[in-house]
Length: 373
Image 1 (tube, one colour):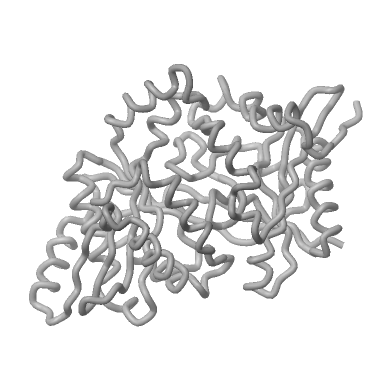
Image 2 (tube, helix red, strand yellow; image 1 turned 60 degrees about the vertical axis):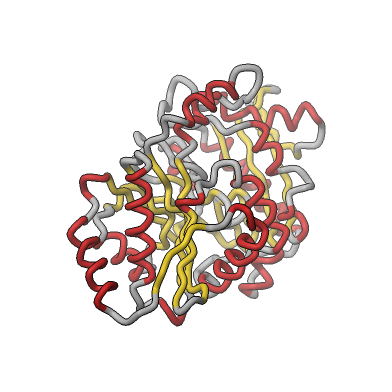
């Protein structure tokens, strides 16, 4: 049976592309959280500011006229300018358990990026490292937190059979309320009280949201500028993401760290809205929105999405202060579990910090790559 891989061009093909995951997961993978189709559609819409510096081509694979897999090939011009690189990316990969299907999809994505003058394929990213990225390679029984990926175990074999090799592992850590190191928290509070350091933490001001978003953008881009794979977010991308996240941001869990009255770091924890989103089964209407709003009130966990400290303050108490404040506020709101993700496998200072707080490594996401001729 021949496999055909065709670019997604028509409205019907776009619908098939977006709905394809429902051919893979229901009834087989209970940890899967169905994405909201309206948000997935926006991801590939030309209005996404990623397209100001990037290009994307979705593909569908067919066998006997039936969709059996999908992929997007990605050129991230900003990444390649920042890293002086020629890397192409792939993402939104989904396929039946068939190495021939996966191979045909990756072949086509590879051809597309080579045609654009690129010499390597890396992924999965959807669409950049500022979005969901990495292939889950362990702990498939645990549901993903908000904005984290999930996939069947056999995807590992499919990608590696094509010749993709590990580029970097992204680690996820989790802690439950009872395991958080309260003694360390109390010790930290005493140290701060006795020291002469002028460190403080404040919530973002929702009544000055745009101004605060600009501040966080500057902190984010400065704090991560030398990290592997980091791509700075443009003003338009930050504004776009902030608009998407604003309805679920809890200002008590979005923190600015200040030293001597000046911004020195920030941390953002989001309520794990995946606990509610999964009840909508991808659709907000006609009943998904009701289910979503109902379950939003019952969320029991948070994801520490990002924590960044400016270079001059990384040896200060700023990072543990932000973590401890998130713990205090999160548990005060009834959250009983938290994930800190993702952390680069060789970011030893961050790993050491979260482990001292009681977090344990419990998931690994892998970015793969392969050189292309």
